[in-house]
View 1 (cartoon, rainbow, N blue to C red):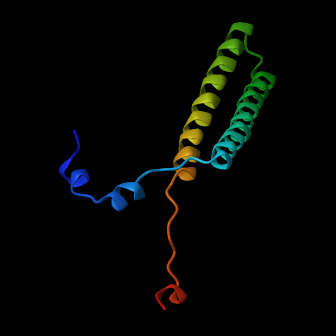
View 2: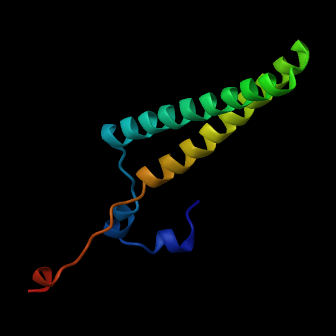
Length: 102
């Protein structure tokens, strides 16, 4: 069932709402997500390694900290991937210049 707003649009308005996905946009989202995700993972594990060097906790505590760091890094990478996807998939804005008006 379509809403009243969608039903009252002409075909040109409806086609303007269709998003197109390009392979370039998809590749850039994947690449930037891998980059940021790997950086988040390295920072998380380096932080746990530094805390281990300072406090010398038990091995079980270390594994728990590494697990928490991994979960945090994956959540950060997922959040960033969602932001990158929404930024890349925005419809292109048409910029009107003065020469277009003539």
